[in-house]
Image (cartoon, rainbow over the protein chains, first blue to last red):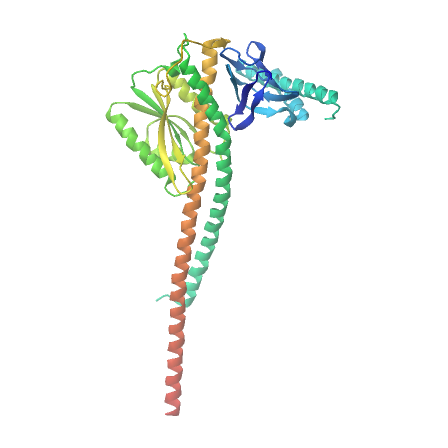
Length: 145
Length: 288
């Protein structure tokens, strides 16, 4: 049996995922990272985006809007600001959020507004990209969304 | 002695009050159950972030973050968590009494205190109590969210970073069980090294992007998490305290109604007796 590690994904308002995984991918501050068991101690902030978890033959997706990722050799922890199981994401809502963010950016007056709008836009775009990937995967498995 | 009609009116009005307190008791009981669920849901995050902070204090970072450095204490900041609404027994007054006695101790040592207050009851208390209020937040409702609290926490963290306060404390109610809530104070900053086990060897994390950015993000979340957990716990305390207070009020109303009912019956009986004796006296006069 290949090595596994414990992965915990938690948000302040509830536990999202906890279990043994083979590897996982997350959007770290400097780009995507893939983590295998026995990784050296590592700590990073997360950008809004997906977390892809591989356990056995099973792949699951989570969406986090930011947070902190901590790696110890046998245990990894994702402290998510808000985490959502990809299944619960609503595409219509994400699209709407993106339109709103774009509008806000066009109408932004101060630098602070621009930064806020850019963040909202990045978040919405990440949600939509993730939904697209989820749909691809489901159709590959012969399931309809 | 009050007439029968007056007593009947009193009984009716107390019965109405009793209905209201009974309803409030039931509402508080169901809200308490939900608040306790939210409390349990917040626990994993708190445990995990404490674990990470524990690892972090065992590591030997070259960069030392302000939140982990102990400074001589000249000024302290307190985040005070109270409920928005009253009718919950002595919950808020116990907490605020405990706070003011602690503040007196601090002031006796020449330490200045500034506050960030969450909840209506605390805000109105500080209007008369005075003191240096840095932030207030009220109207969180029964389901507080982390995003609602970030502002009040941020103000205190900024003050700490700029050296306006040297320690940050949290004052809130601890949910012991349904019957008991205990006001507690805990120090959040600086994060104490003595809480953590001895370090194993010499290692440090790989930081991405920079140690400062990561620690900033992590430690800010840590404090926010503590405040959020305490706020959720305070809601559970508020609901259980209200439940008990309303149960007592309902019981008292019941006792009151019993007494009044007895007085009413006596008054009624006295009236009947008086009437009968009048009639018999009248009849005796006629036949005599």
